Image (cartoon, rainbow, N blue to C red; front, side):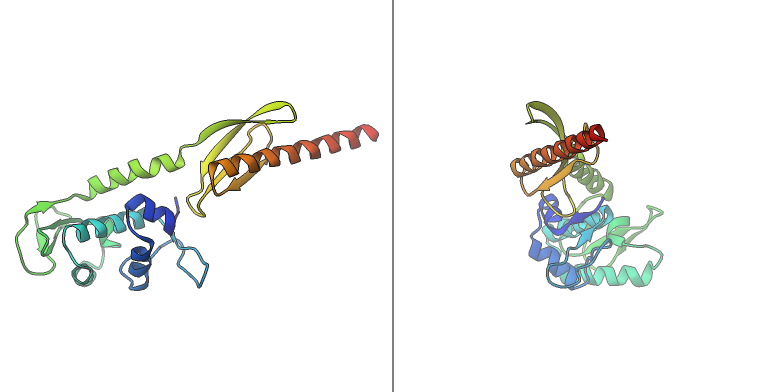
Length: 210
């Protein structure tokens, strides 16, 4: 599953400016596709969403970006075998420092060497919450459009990579279209159905002529 910046911002409640800044400052970069100039699209994986969600939770708890960066540098040096620490470790914070529960679950590391734990948030909770938020994006919606005096079933999907929606008509293989809004997409798929039916009729007439 890949997510563009607009979709990530909507899912996590971040601003596009925040996501852009975290990318440009190498705090959290998109692992699927990085920006390659004006007009290019960043694509984030689900693991990237977890990292962004954890970073937002730390920020909401009072942890500055500078402290997050310092904690990540510490983890990279002392736990080099852990890829993407924000997505693979469990964190504790009291709003002043960042603690990490190691994999043996018996050792807690104070990445900033200060403070006492006041409250915790667990990675499993964040992952489950994200799954619940992301799942509806992949649920399809069914509609019916009328073309040439007949009704055709249409399946509408949300486009998480480019934004907007895309639709398909199961009764006509290869008949798909897209749009920025649901209404526009339904109009576009109706035009696509009309076009496909016209082509099918022309082919049928050509076969009869032969």
